[in-house]
Image 1: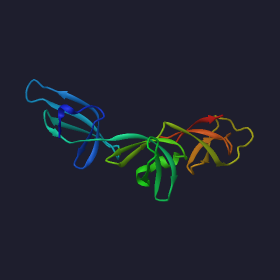
Image 2: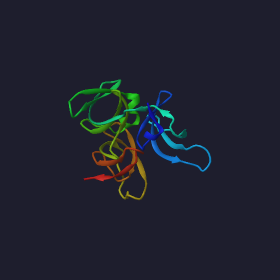
Image 3: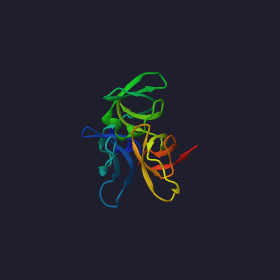
Image 4: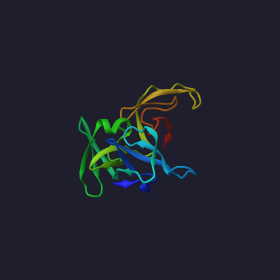
Length: 186
């Protein structure tokens, strides 16, 4: 058991069986009454942010969250298989844990996986990835980059909006947080 003196940014707390990461904290000592610690906590799995206040010296339960680099290998139908590059162990991550990150995963891509007691919590992808357009309607003569957008399917099967002049086979940079087109890659 730890106490509120051990609270730092990035520490993961176990509150009612859920894991919460400390985003920010402030030790407050008012002129009247006892000191307390005001925290802003983010749910590790869902991303929900809440404020919570603890009396100074209160006991808290901390958890160990290990962030390690993995290489994506393949999808076996119900889970995604990753390999730890340090010891070549393979780990199966359920599709529910991978979530929307599956739209941007390519084989042999490097990702960071947060683990708690060997259980995967979430994936951290790079800010952007390079994907090839596998299908899009052909552009018309006179289409310019400022004219508008059209739907395009990339090699992972995800559909994004791209400028009208882009064609099938073009490599594009895609933001993994929003799914937005960022630019062409030569």
